[in-house]
Amino acid sequence: MDEIIIPLNKKLKVKIKPTVRNIFADKDMIIALWDGEATALDDKSYRSSYSWYMKMKNGKITDVVAFLDGMEFSNIMERINVN
Image 1: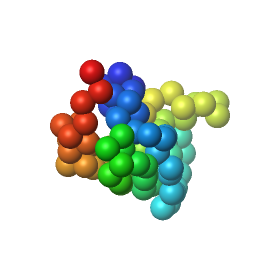
Image 2: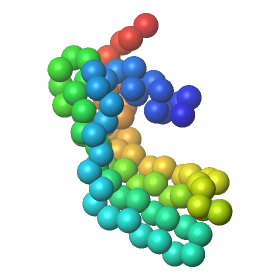
Image 3: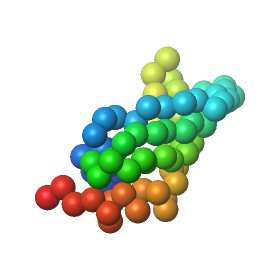
């Protein structure tokens, strides 16, 4: 959250709108593949694909490993200064 989500959200006009491509479940592991789209503070589009690997226990997420488009993330982080 502190390293990716919060800094990214500060560079966007609105939160990312998700479009789920697929969800896979195997026992206590859920994998969500999705695309996100938003508008950055400089009015350029932000588009990225994500995969989240979520471990579940008693209906709650206990652990998450998430992957995103590193080039798109790097681009917006370098392009927009919010300090």
